[in-house]
Length: 165
Picture 1 (cartoon, helix red, strand yellow):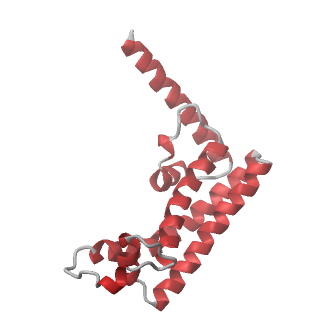
Picture 2 (cartoon, rainbow, N blue to C red):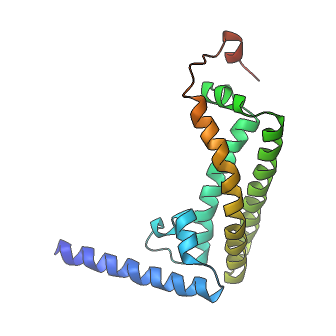
């Protein structure tokens, strides 16, 4: 009984995925790229709409914009204080430009939420997909530097760990 229910669920998910692929191809949006960058196959199997794809994309945008925001405006956590040291003025400026792009896309999604329709969702998804590769190529070196900052023997001086507010 459980095996047939699982098979039925998998068949249902496959059917919804196929429907989503058709819908995306209608707007010339590459499913494989969306999957690669945003893991859209992880979406709730009930969701196969462009609305759901847009929301999945915005989750990732929000995650990375929050990370960049913490570097640009560090909170009083040791992680933020330690990692923000990897940013010199040029990197900070570059990261702010990326941050603005991600926040603009998040706000565009908020506007679409108000009067969502298929065409608006498709345009948003296509635009973000075109922009995301450039964004991730700029984020990756920063993430590597952040990771490598934890591999050093540097210890924060007591003056570095004081409240920054």
